[in-house]
Image 1 (tube, rainbow, N blue to C red):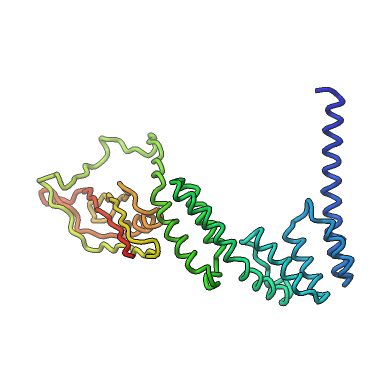
Image 2 (cartoon, rainbow, N blue to C red):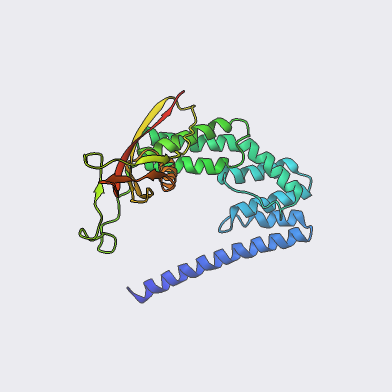
Length: 291
């Protein structure tokens, strides 16, 4: 690379650094003017700090200046721009003035339904295209946007739909591959105790003492459906669940609860010739939702 090219790149980087520094200085100047109650001057500075600075902070300080000048409608529009651009944005109620917090809540209530519908439309399009990874990501983002605002008109139904489609999207994702076996996590065949199964005719199967299943709760707004899976457990000689794994997954969230619950199950152990033995049992799992 020639010396001239190096000099050109260095000059470009310098110009960029100066621009960013100038924007930061402009924003800092606007904040100082606001603190000095020079609101019109602060607004002029903020108008020149839109590039290279935190835009949400710019709009927040613009709204503060406009509130102080009695231009409430303009302040509300400034706050609406924050929500439109970044629906997950939250004001710190501990640091922001009460008037700003109140206006922001009102602005969010006005803008949130449209922003949520837009995100829902994109996530649903991914679901319909069977791009379940993108759909799941989109529905999670939508639920994060809604957050504690589910009582906002036009949002509650979207929360139910997003929750339902997120569950279906996760259920449609390919199962995560098990980690490869290594010498550290594979017991020696000679050292491992025999694990019997229902096909072992000379073994008395285990008897359930405690087997609590996690509850399955699902929004009915997406219609009726049924998801089938299978859980395999190995019950040790003491009647405790030694291991549990999904042979066939159902829903990611439910599978996680089910595997945790299985670790607490208690059995009267299987026996062979009166001696307790390990036993592998497979349970069929069926999740059903009715419209």
